[in-house]
Amino acid sequence: MTMSSGNRGGMVPIEEPRGKLGVLIPGLGAVATTFIAGVEAVRRGLGQPIGSLTQMGTIRLGKRSDKRVPAIREFVPLASLDDLVFGGWDIRDEDCYHSAVHGSVLDPQLLEKVRPFLESIRPMPAVFDQYYVKRLEGSHTKHGKNKWDLAQMLRDDIERFRAATGVSRMVMVWCGSTEIFLQAQEVHQSLEQFECGLKDDHSAITPSMIYAYAALKSGVPFANGAPNLTVDVPALLELAKQQALPVCGKDFKTGQTLMKTIIAPGLKARLLGLSGWFSTNILGNRDGEVLEDPESFKTKEESKLSVLDQILQPEIYPQLYKDFYHKVRINYYPPRGDNKEGWDNIDIFGWLGYPMQIKIDFLCRDSILAAPIVLDLVLFMDLAKRAGMRGIQEWLSFYFKSPMCAPTVYPEHDLFIQLMKLKNTLRYLRGEDLITHLGLEYYD
Image 1 (cartoon, rainbow, N blue to C red):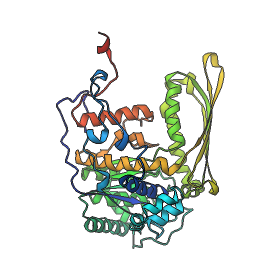
Image 2: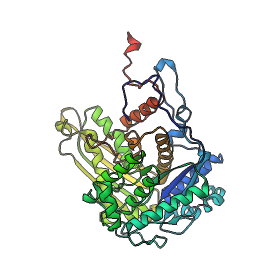
Image 3: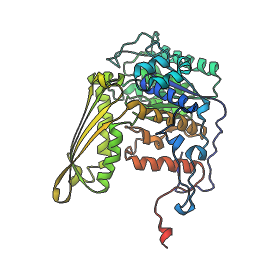
Image 4: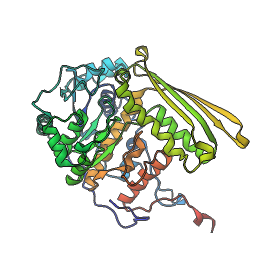
């Protein structure tokens, strides 16, 4: 979808969100169950959807002096929380209540209040291969003669879910574990090659790619919440365009990288130099255990390391950012559970090269930060489909560590530019003027 500098009067047609919206999640672990339990708690008035742009955010329209600032959920036709219906897959055969208990994210008293609802959501057997996630084992899995067969099983699951729940449309969000590091190969270059690869059981086609393929073939938008190479290959982007479906990813931007995309733009804005940025994390959830494997950590490391280079642009500002040292460490520490702790030591320099330091100790809750991201992606991806938007949804970069973008441009990592792009996309859809923040008219 092409955007112009202004769109007043050119409202994009958007289908109304009639009927139920199915939310399909590969990986019903801590993030997914925190999201599902949280949505049910909000529906019952037991909590607030804090962190969700779709539920709590506003959008300025027109001039500052116009004082038009509606809630986003009133400005664009989003699905209601009451319309969400949940389903998914997991390698462990336990309902969402018991999975949430094992995740130890939410207070047991809250979980008890939504227990019957969570117990009603049981995972379908997952497509899983330990080759791609070395540290996990699971018995609740599908078995087929090849990967094509597994993809058809997933498509059958999707259709059964559609029939059983009566949903009018669906969105799939990958909340599974981080797979091993892979680069795009010949099998990923076209849809025809990819489908042949499925039938040939090609080793470069991962479980997450099989889910993405099944979703897109079934007419379901797909969002990738992990750093895996998944829907960001030419074959699946070809399928998304063929099916007129939106896709986005990748890797939910939650803790340490969220802080980097807030702080690094500030350093660059003030032209403060960077000598080095050392980051380390401790966490004890399933994600932490998976990242103990060097091949899975490599995938996450690539996602985390790319952020600073693309924000600071050392090729444009060599005096400030050339050859800065950037190191990321993730340590599995079971006692911490989902309560991740991220330490950052940042060595900067200012006027005449004098050194200074910034130190951050972010004691965050990984799934608490991720849950509102999942909610927003579900609602915005459904909106995108109803608005006829297809292919990569770069306007949703706000939610990701490694945002997908067109091959001719670099990804935008600056959180504030990302938010401006997101809100300008919503303004565009509703025929409102895009906001440039120029403001000269106030001083004529």
